[in-house]
Length: 100
Image (cartoon, rainbow, N blue to C red; front, side, top):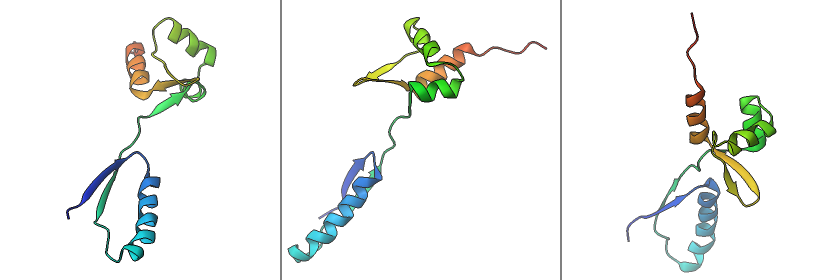
């Protein structure tokens, strides 16, 4: 049997499988095939509080930016989140050249 490939967004899954394998192998009487686990990073997201601190603005100002369409917000359940790529795009649009 070949190698099973598993993608996960957390290293916890890798540790859980290792513990499960150690528990099951003795009862099976044979080794479980190798599993290659690739940990995939989740997208970086800001909460309203962390983004306000990062940009050194108030949460109310962030709400204004979202209402005006300047900044994109994502609602996840009852929480508002900001994707790092959207934040970078907003900052790029706001970038100005210093006058010498």
